[in-house]
Image (cartoon, rainbow, N blue to C red; front, side, top):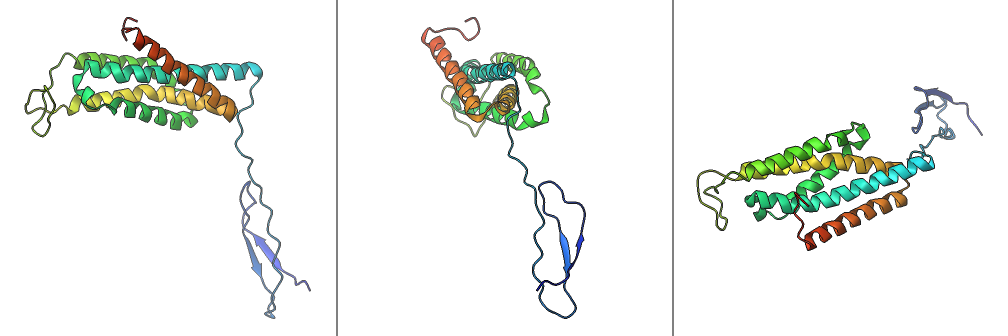
Length: 219
């Protein structure tokens, strides 16, 4: 048999949450039937922003261009910067790791809608200027370091290594933000197809440039 229950709700039922209820049993100590659970609303899964066909084509093109730029520029800087600042050539994965770090940070920041991609030309110019500037200095290794054909001295080579690592990562933050933003505008399979296509083309074009011994500065 059903027993009368008094239910007090604490606050309104919010979207995607369960409401909390306080149930008081009768004084005779008999067990009451459990009250029906309050309905809960489940939030729909995140879906890509609806775009018209022209908007989708534009987003796909921008994603392709950003992915192409990321891979081509990454391969270019990995080879050009150590050729200017020789000490970086002893750390083969340094520029690669900083590129990945920048792309990842940019993808994480795309939710904030800051528009960091506008700072890409300035960040790239600062990196090129820093690499060119460090190329005019002769660094000597510290007492706890050993590199072939490097002069020994009291000064460490930490300054150029740390500076160029940070600057290179900053260069790729705007690109990562652009890629992450455009990935969200398109269906997953379509987005990753354009992303992969741009990456492959950037890698292939850099391979072509390398095959013909193109200069990274003058083409």
